Image 1 (tube, rainbow, N blue to C red):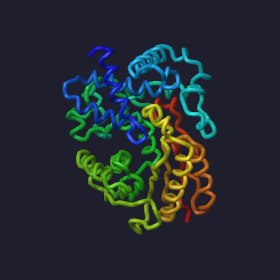
Image 2 (cartoon, rainbow, N blue to C red; image 1 turned 60 degrees about the vertical axis):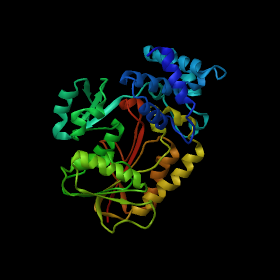
Image 3 (cartoon, helix red, strand yellow; image 1 turned 120 degrees about the horizontal axis):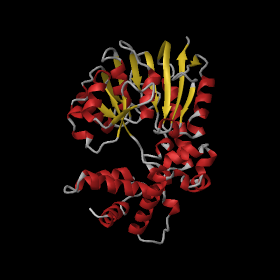
Image 4 (spheres, rainbow, N blue to C red; image 1 turned 90 degrees about the vertical axis):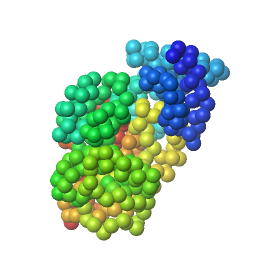
Length: 371
């Protein structure tokens, strides 16, 4: 496919993107309908569309969609070759919306990380990690503590079609999300609750840590996501769980007391702006404030569902103060029966910065029930 053909196809995708139709969803739909193009051509279209949203504030909005996409591609190539070519002041002013500076302190390295294409991270099942690395070949091990199962993939194969994926030997999971699992450190025989389980990525990690022994309650407000979770657990041969709908309110799905609870709460997703650059321009401060109310509601609803000594892990893939330290400080102050729990060898509140692990930005907070 010629460069111009790529820009023409990308322009057709761009025309369908809106706040209600996010870029990743439109790309999945449109690329799925293009049966005759190669995986490399699909990647080129997706790369161009995402480059447009990373460099949107640098583009001449009066030009045609194809011209703007071509310029975004050129800027991405220039930046990839020499990140210093774009000054930190320009990145701070143009790479993120103005409102975010009152909520997040992005370092120059973090801003540069946001402008790079994301790394494709995999999490292999513990007993299959070496075999997966041998089979996929073009992989590099993750840094500790993810080095035993985390892999960065740099090849061009469609991983969803590999025998290893269909055998449940690995999941595609960002490294920051893998670190959430390591912070939980679930043990065989324990009882855990993944309260906002979504499609089950972190729940599968907990099950792997537990060697499929013990029990995990997986809840979410979306039945569609729970159906997807059930498909993934069947492929991964995970059976020690119960999947139940729960809206995050005070009416709990069970009276069980847990050894551990993971609250991977709905959030503004600011930490995913490298992987999801379109959302930089659709997320608002009002979204942040509304989601903070939901996060606090979820935490308060399940705070008393821990056994004595049980651990509560709060995780959000965002970096805004309102959804991170403000939530953790206020929740901890209102629940004196919970003591701060250090995570990942750091402290009870941990920021995972985009530049630190070459991954999504994430915030973690931990507590242990004392009585």
